Image 1 (tube, one colour):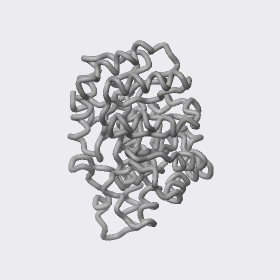
Image 2 (image 1 turned 135 degrees about the vertical axis):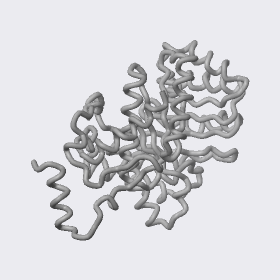
Image 3 (image 1 turned 30 degrees about the vertical axis):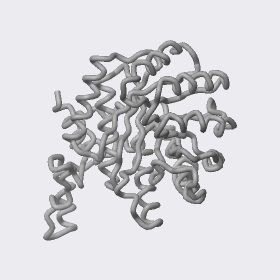
Image 4 (image 1 turned 180 degrees about the vertical axis):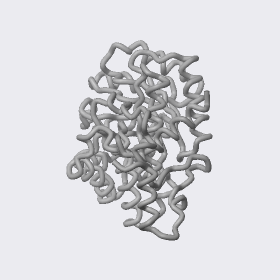
Length: 337
């Protein structure tokens, strides 16, 4: 193999009069990528961290906001029929929860992944919810509690049942905004402080909700860098990484949105995550257009069943560009400590 110096010399000959440095980009104002990364740039780097993954399988996720008047479960059935594997239900108030339980009674909750997100939740409603799920032998897969005066009670009820299969896990959730080193460092500091003050209990996992932009290459490298950081800093903790497209990118025409959504999902699948939320669907109401749900889901089916990206662990491993940029972002994150 030619040296990097020889390679760059050949590129310069084929592009006379052009400054090759102009092809490099500065990311977040402080990280410089290498448009012409070479094997010499990654010599000595730890590029085997992804080998700890057992698979690159992810769940196709879709989120529903339950309104006060909702009594239909057809959009949920439709999403499941078209391959949704992870459903998230978002309830704004307590009365919606008990009213809607009968509506979803026909769903085999123990056969899919579910998340239950409560903006408001009272003790009496929570206790009724637990009793109904126990009577149905159903599973609460991931539970997100509101932060309020009743939080200790919610947690206590779950801990009393921590050996019960009813609870697969309950979550501490942290949101990483659109890639920005300073903002990510703040989230990581909060995460680290929380774990030091409140060690994880049995069945408790940490969910990472990542908001993605339309920079395909940076998205892949930043997810890989965050995974590498979490693996090195918190070796014994299981992190469930979930990605969704920045809401500011939703207001596009249909075809533009599908292209951005496809790139975002492709980047997530290459980097390796637990759930990819269908972009533009946070949160769908139950009167959503079925064709919209179908199109959002089919993007990920193509990635799985035609591109087979779920069969390859870390497809970007070994790429000089990705490995170099991943390491640079990783080292920036470590500057926090």
